[in-house]
Length: 102
Image (tube, rainbow, N blue to C red):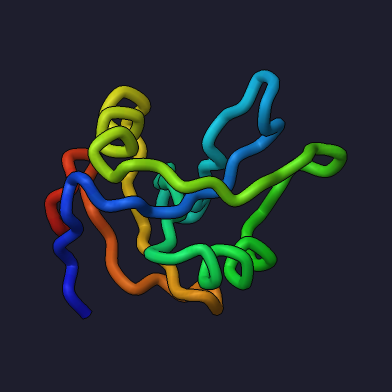
């Protein structure tokens, strides 16, 4: 699978508490102590894949589009890796916070 993403392209993330104190949902792999943001190439994949993510009970979640370059700034500031997922929640590929392949 092509691991390049145009910096001006829209990608899809899961947002917790949309509209208020919203944050992009991250995940933690405790076994490897890795923090990452799950990202989807399209809305349909995100709607399917969100069911596979660990989410805080009682919180509201929404799929939102974000410009990939804006996501890179967010992940760089937070030190998150980027995991591109498919609609089944499987990892298609992994990227460093700067968008370079892992």
